[in-house]
Image (cartoon, one colour):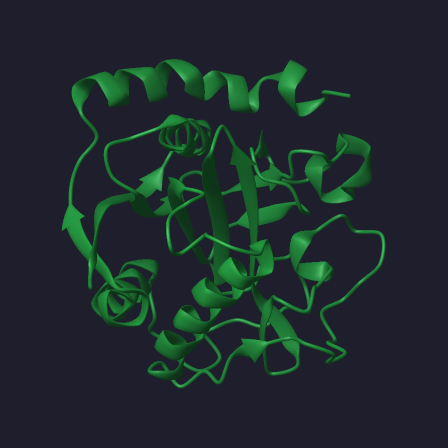
Length: 242
């Protein structure tokens, strides 16, 4: 039986706005929501619990925001970001937390195979992308991350609050100077774009995850709230929170 999901897409969206939209979706909604987005300008997002001083790249990144989800910092360039927001009782997120990561990552791995990428959960593998003391998400892997070519290429994190879950993830298409050593999709699909990757995921998720996706736009009220809230995520007080 398929499940009705709202589908939102925001390509080349402002970094603070991206975080504000996901905050709004975490707060509630009539339907669970899947969102694909990219960032303009490129930005670095700190994990919710990170200190600025734990991430040397923060001084070099230009635009920096803080996410609502935990984990390490991510340089949002040459990638596709996705977010799922749903009640914690939803079948995709019901049960042990690690099971929900496996469900989502296994589905993405099946789609990446169509782009010639043999991605798999890291498990007990030792990967070359693990680098100490950078504070970067893609330099610290877990057994649930997706790896290929000996390095991490997809990482994600969740925030659960008020009976709902926000699941952020980043799929690396290309590499940047702030994240050396990671695996990317471009080594297998040189012409791949975030839009094409999102299209591939949209095409297969209904079958793989039992989702019926309905393309939608933010309502005027949602858009106004997100634009008003965007500054918070790039504010000095939030970035340097203790």
